[in-house]
Structure formats: C-alpha cells, structure tokens
Length: 120
Image: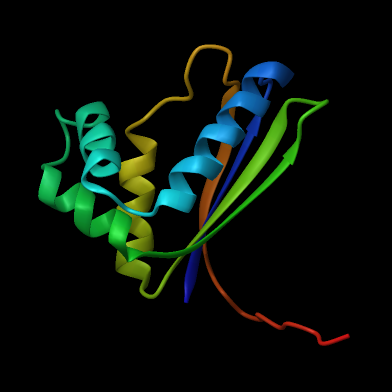
C-alpha cells in the first residue's frame, strides 16, 4: 500500500469549511460519471478522461485532516501500488487549489510501513 500525503496552508477558513463540505458530499456519493467528468475537465490538457477514471478508481481510501481556524489541511490518498500513487500524484498535481483555497506546501509519496487499528 502507498500513500500520497499533501499539505495545504493559507486557506481562508470559510473557504476551507465550504470545500470540506463539498468534498464530503462528493465522497459520500462515490465515484460517479459526473465527478469523473468534473475532474477530467480540470486536467483536459494533460489527461484523457479514461485515465482520470482509472486513477480515481485506484484510490482505495482517503483521509482529510483540517484545522479550519488556521486554514490548513492535509490529504492522505491510499493506493495499492506505487505506480498508481504516482499517477494519482500527477493527476492532482495538475490541479490548483481554487480561489482562497490556500497553497500546496508539499506532496509526497510514501510506502505504508505500519497501518494498525486498535480495539477499545
């Protein structure tokens, strides 16, 4: 398992809260043709729609961390293979945070070394 970890800073708190709500709603709906089309439109000069669909389908888990008051967040996307994680990295790297969405501070790929869930 591999993870792409991205950090953002400088978001306007209200904008970050709005974006988190939109992301939550989109993720709850799942990977739809509409969501693939929206993403494909943003990167149409660099990726074909079918590749966008394949890469989005390669994401097995997403965790978003946020400090809305500070306007900072981090996103962790998990993929089964390093190749998929690097492809997802290129896909998301082709997009920019929207107006007021802050700036990307870092984006790195890691092998998942430990993934432990503890029971209570």
